[in-house]
Length: 193
Image 1: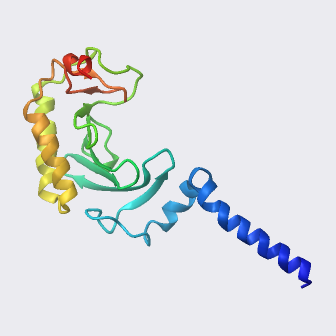
Image 2: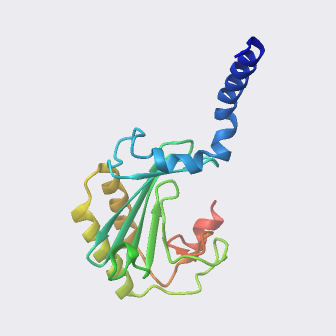
Image 3: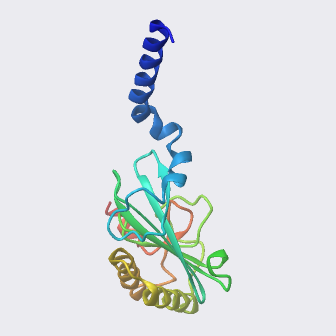
């Protein structure tokens, strides 16, 4: 190899290596991280079997794991990126993690529960649907099933937060959530923020 070719090759490799941290997060990290998930170090509370995804808009590396329950599924996620959080989605149904029944979600940085999904409702309006006492009992049952299987402390924190919110849930006074579901915040909570 000629001297000019070597210098060009070294310069090209150095330039690419310098640009990867700049452009990688929003160009190709999302495609590479799922393959690297098994070998990437996991932060406290994330089980060894968790898979990884990458979001360049702030969350960074996100760990995902799920547990089939007798009457549905518990889907967990956590990150310690710029926006550190942990979350849990409980899904009811007879098909474990392939279920598509009622959904209840919790994410630690917003500390409220969201029931349902989809739609474009915006936040802070009266919810267009009600949650019956039977549906609340179903969520409590899923919660207890998940508690029996929870091991990391991060899972217990999410379960206790949901339990606290469910204990005070009135299915008739929900408000719309920006995610499309309805949450347990009151209309007054929106006017105070």
